[in-house]
Length: 301
Length: 322
Image 1 (tube, rainbow over the protein chains, first blue to last red):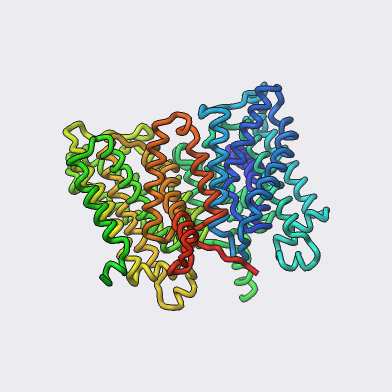
Image 2: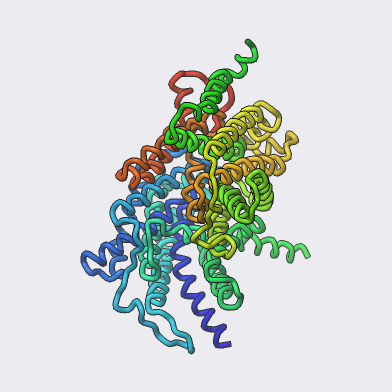
């Protein structure tokens, strides 16, 4: 029973980070119908930026978020202005062209990190990296708890922006129906630029926080990109609440699988990949899609 | 002459093929190594193009097939099997795997399929690194013994020529046309009686078999393989980039891409500064091609010469919406 509680709490802590990691992908997909493959490269670059700020100025990783996130917001807008906006728009779904273009951006970012910091594995050590606290009979790392706290704050912030501000309402409007939003006077191009900035800033926050938990190389981020993609597919691609639920589901499955089954640690990443393929094939609408199907059946009966 | 008019590349191709097959008599080992490399890339690019170019199903998981072919050859060679048996067996295993992967993932469309194939490729690499009998992440070595480079060279060049002939032939026939129809509009193709899932599975299986044989030859040539060399994401990446840069969905495009990339690779290996920036080059090429000419070198050529393509643009999906 105690083990159950500890594993559940661990899953919850992981879910916070997973949600932050996925929101950026979801915002960009929602507004532009683009799958941002460069997300992984942006997370990696943010991890290195955090590392550099820590080395050079002794800035705490969580404090450096205040610098890294705005900087990446600007970087995201710049990426949009220079590359993304020139792509032909597709109304039916994400185009192969945008996917491959952003894949190219990812490769360039990887090489950039490699040119500046080299290919060695880096990690950030702070005074609290090894600290942990005892709660309900389980030990939880201080970085994990901090990451969860910051994730929660950022998600609450994003929700407030999306619900209370004009910008947020415009983003949601474009996500639901671009043409209708434009008819109501929303400047969809501008909104897309801002949304790409927000998505990039969220990738950066996730990357900064990942750097306090994991060691990283320029190749870092691929498995997290796949996890994030798995989460937004689980969440039904367009729903922001769905992302939170998807993050919880993936985190619980991963943690419970490693705690209660004999799947070796080296195969743990394969869980999310397998889940991704299974969900894409069996429930393309994600959990909301499944829910609707059941709902409809219940009503029909 | 009508025959040559219908196949304008044939005389050139035959000339090229005989030059390649005669090369071991005159050329040095270094040149032959470069030619071997080109042939290897031509096989990978052209085989991938069957599914990715013709049918428009961009897969980022093809290193799995290289790996399956390579591991089958090395592991069975260590058990005393001859390459004449291990190469076809590797191809058969790759076909089986391609069907296993294709059955669920071909229900996905466009980018969703692509993302799923990243997942499949990663899962295969993770599993190959974790298993006992594959030697884990440290890889496996071929048994010590005499190694016949010329034999391997002929096999690789022969495979490249067979692949090209096959691809060129398929493009002209019903199978190639049904793949083309799937790329342009899968629903319309289905409505016209194309069994899209079966056609995609067949294209996947065929290209998997070709790639796996190339992987087996790769393993015999390099004598040593590891998940980092044959299951690597960068290999999948190179396989995809060659046809994209050259021109997806054409017969010549992947060949041009493969020649460009093997040339780049030879140059890159020679210069340390370039070697450190190969991802700049790959990524930059991808960005430039996607922004300016999604049809690659072939598209650029057609634009320069001002010739309208005989068929509609071989791009996966560039639909300008309302």
